[in-house]
Image 1 (cartoon, rainbow, N blue to C red):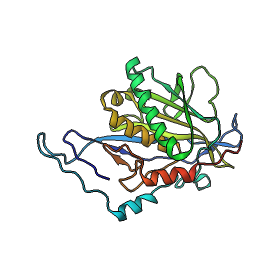
Image 2 (cartoon, rainbow, N blue to C red):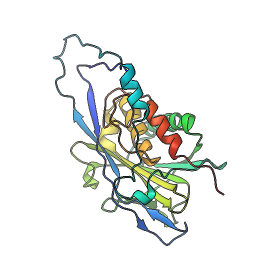
Image 3 (spheres, rainbow, N blue to C red):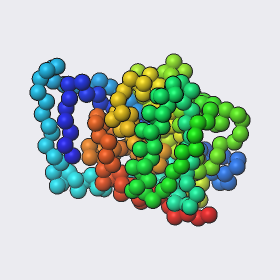
Image 4 (cartoon, rainbow, N blue to C red):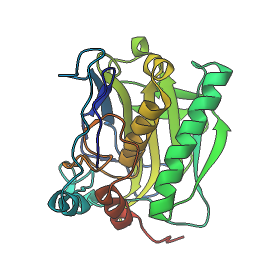
Length: 266
């Protein structure tokens, strides 16, 4: 993949954290929760050319590099809970719902970010066989310490649903410094290795000042974690921990999500 260094470019470094799941007793039988997210860390680009200098395009990836990228994927559970390794969402007829709590954004900003998120969901849908449906705005209560979300009206978390929230850095010990996003599966049916819940938060001040390309890259990456993918080692994959203007799924991203996606058991 050709990557162009730009004078004002930003590098988003996405660092992975995941702890072992704990068993739940609740509306989803034999489910497990994932309580630690996969954070996205933003850092200024290093060794960028001075303003006004010419930039140089990086050479396209070699055939060997592209071949390596195709097998460059892993389950987010592998290192922490091998029993849940390769857990993924199921391709049921009913779509996976997703909602957004955007009370920290203005109406125009909300429309822009929902469109960017829809674009990111569409990219994953096109390669996974999963279907996603935007179900509108939904206020959530976000517990930063536990990294959990639930509807603010007190209703239980819905199954086959992804909750998204925009949070100020001042309201989170996790979102600060370079950290601009967090994402993770939230519920897994252990016996079937089927993910049935997910959540992600994004730092609102970063989203407000960043551009569409950077936002789409961040959303693609964090949604990859929600779908069950860990970090990749090859720059051709969106799950690589450092991305700039990278807004295309790589062969490893595609192969990984296909491997983890399950047939519907319902």
